[in-house]
Length: 112
Length: 115
Image 1 (cartoon, rainbow over the protein chains, first blue to last red):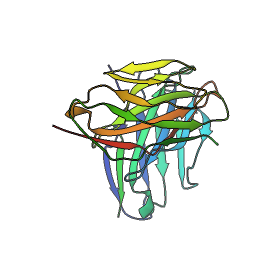
Image 2: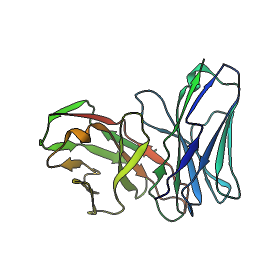
Image 3: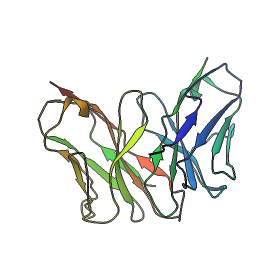
């Protein structure tokens, strides 16, 4: 079965650079979520979108923005990167009306 | 706000031993409950779920029952294998919106099964 696709899988950036992470949800899923997982930590919710509209917002820094496009894929844009932004970034998707979320393999971002 | 508390690890077991990971939650509404598993270097996989009180989720020999009276969702497996070594996360989703409800995770429990 098709799963959530994230790209790139690994990304290395310098401080103050920008990064764009992409997420392609499971076909027919209309809701996407972004989470950040630091080393040895549990995933922290950043933001979610349903039908291209922001649905919920968590602890997402103002330096980050995200959107969902008409084909339901989503992009997380991160600017003025800081060392503390180094983490695993997961995208998840779900079908509206269903509460289980399916996660992608993650993008490992390293900020040097 | 909502929160999930699960037992700290690591939990070290021998193969074929019984596994229990405790999970309790606090929520303002009536949440759905989940267990996710994360193998080294991989993403989170949905292991099982329960959406209402007394529901039992089960998958791959793992079980958990939604106990509203004790606000708990403990994970159990009768006979673990080396391949069950992973980090297990308990999570809840409030149902305040029709879509886009965030997951709130517990801190994760690392399980190591030795041959």
